[in-house]
Length: 290
Ligand code: ADP
Ligand code: MG
Image (cartoon, protein in one colour):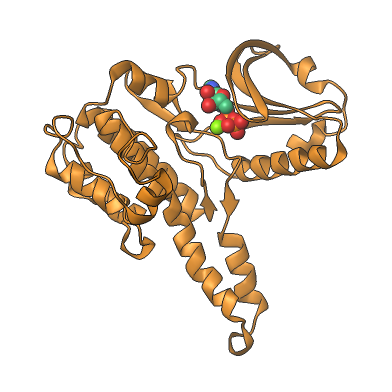
């Protein structure tokens, strides 16, 4: 029971000691945590509970949401929770350690990924998203900084940072059982639709990730020509400039296009993406057993 630790002071430090810093986000610092008994290494996401009551409450609530969502998930390409500690001054979330850092840095190092490598990364991400969808979870913050590497050589990834994740399945379900169909409010019906669209937001982000993997730069940015990035995104203005895209297969480009559809109704869903010719190509040999 993870909540056993709730009221105990400094229980985290009794079980783990902290080592190198792995990264830093807006509110959290992430460090290697070593279990004092087993010597096993984990990543601890540490949040300082600031004095100011309203901000403190917000941090506590966000931590609660992230923790409870991530605790439900057990999947090879998603970081797993090993412990939760709530202390007077700090909150700790103990996770699988992804020792090889962010996919972001790996792509910077390699400039871009060869198509087979990009395919391998995308396949793991699609399987993760499909698993989340089945649990009614939308990640909502998929980006290269939140895709971590368990092994950089064969690109084994772990999806991390559920700080913005949301459960859509549950509210949909509750609204369905609470209302008698004849009396049900229109927004309940649209919630259903939005729920469906909601998990397609992850597919859009994955499209941006795939684009960057294949060429090494983002499809939408402020640096690109005139329209501000917001307008580029809303209008779906992006392209596949030469020479960067010359060697990418037409199936790869087609999948990017299908993921970066502005209207979610036209956007490819996770099952269709998994069945897309680009992902079916070369899925042979032990390399693809994940
Ligand atoms: P935030 O919600 O503040 O963005 P994240 O959960 O994204 O926090 O963590 C911030 C950074 O810490 C990540 O981008 C990554 O570099 C590092 N990090 C987070 N979790 C792990 C982990 N399980 N293993 C290794 N590094 C991690
Ligand atoms: Mg993050």
